Length: 432
Image 1: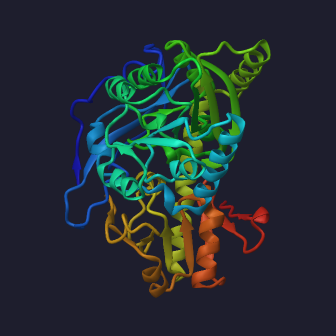
Image 2: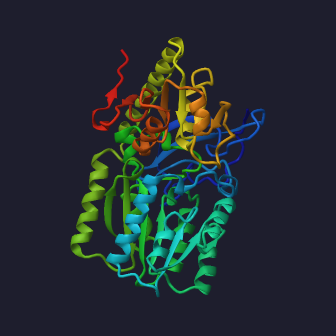
Image 3: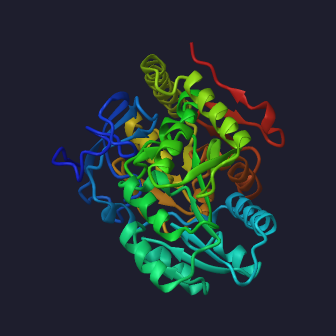
C-alpha cells in the first residue's frame, strides 16, 4: 500500500464549498486514508494508493462534500459499475421512462438527454417508447457497451464546453436526466452551467440522488467514497439552481438507494404552492440537523460503534468455524471494509454478479472478487450483503441458487439477519 497526501486537484470540498463557494464548513466524518473504491486491481501484489477521505458540510447551503485528491479522469474513464446488472434498478428505470413519456407527452420528435447514461439502462426504455435519445457517458468501456446496444452515446465528461458542442449539433432536449451523477461531479458550477446551456424554456430537468439525511438518520456512511464528491440536500440544490437561472419546483421522495430525492427543475417560475412545498421540504432538512455540528458529531460516534460491532461479529463467526463471504463488490463494501480494517481472515471472499468486477481484487484488503459459481463452491454458511439497497434481490438470488440454509446479513444501518420470505421481520443483532 502507498499512502498519498499530496496536493488536491482543487480546494473544493476542503477550503470552500463546491456548490455555493462559501468557506464556512465543518467536519462531519474523517475516514482517514483509504483506496479508491472502484479501482479493482487484477494483480494481488499491485501497489494500492491510499487517499484522504474527509466528509465536510457547508454551513451556508447544507451540501455535504469531500475533497478531490484524485483526478476525475482516473476515477471515471474506466469504470466497473454497470447499471443493468440490477433488476431492481432496471424496473425503476422502466417505470420512470414510462411515466415521463405519459406526463410530459413525449413523442418521436422529442430528444431525451441523459448525463452519465452508463450502459444505456434507462435510455433503452425511452427509445422503446419512440423518443429520440442521446447519452453522455465519460467511462469509455461503459460507453462502448451502450453504443453496442444502438443507443447514441457521446463519450465525454459533461460540463459547459461539452454542452455547447452538443447544443450546436442537436435540438434543445425535451428532458435532461441526471440520475445519480451529480454526486460524482467535482465542479458542480460547471455542470449546472452546462445544463443551463442545453436547456430552453420548455426543457424539464430531472435529477435523482440519495439524500444527505440518509447519513444522519440511517447511518449510511458507507456511501462516502472518493467518487462521491457531493452529498445532496434540497437546501443546496435550490441555491445552486438559482445561480444558473433555473428553478427547483418539485421534490419527490423515492425509495432507491436507501432513500433518494428526485428534484424537478425548469426555467419556469414555480407557483406559490410549489414554492411553499419546496420551502417546507428544506425546513424539514434543517430541523433534522442538516447544518447542526452536534448532530454530525453524534453520527460519527455511531459510525464507530457500527464498525466495532461488525468486527466483533466477524471474529465470533471465525472462532465458530463459520464461512462468511461478502456479496457485491460495491463502493460501499470498499468503504466499510477499509475503514473497519476487516481482513481476509474474517471474510473469505467477495462475490459479484458483474463480469466487469470478477477475478479482480478489492483494495487494499486483498479480497478476491468471485462469481456466483465460485461462491457456491466456497460453501458459505453466511453472506454479508454490502449492496443493502437491493438486499431483497440479492438474498433471493443467494437462497434460490445456493440454498435457504445460508444466513444473509446487512451491516447498515445495523448488523441485521435477513429472514427468508419475511424481510419485514429482520432480526437485529445486539452486542452488549
